[in-house]
Length: 216
Image (cartoon, rainbow, N blue to C red):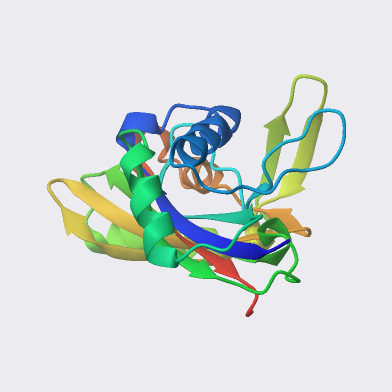
């Protein structure tokens, strides 16, 4: 390992419905076309050493995704950013790049929480919307079910909600903020929070605005 770079990038409306696998492929393609000196894994089928912090659910946008890239030759950060930006497809935007110590754990092991902004249509008065949030936060437990092809998982959503608040109002909608746990102990999903609030059908936009990582 010669150099490890941490990228922060945005995933916009144009690509919000692509899978995480397709997102990985888009980044590989952009890095190769930019002639970035990628380091590869060993073995029968070598792959570029790219490490994403957290998979973003399909249909969400983000302004704070994190990706670590391992290089086999050193590059200047400006040159790296310039090359990559020219190759990224519409909807993917490189926001920043920084060099980090190569010995750090994978970014997925550093994530502790995620923050989201949710735009939701509602004619509720401000005090009624606040009362809806307060009622959810006051609950001792919020039983939920996650259905998978081969199993159904029951869990308690309440301890995964660290913060939930009203950011503001605009054009017949509220903007809600939430900070949800996202680590080995459990991962909260904003769409599950909206379902628990009874607002699933009113959601316009769910955007991840920050990934909270353990300090370097």
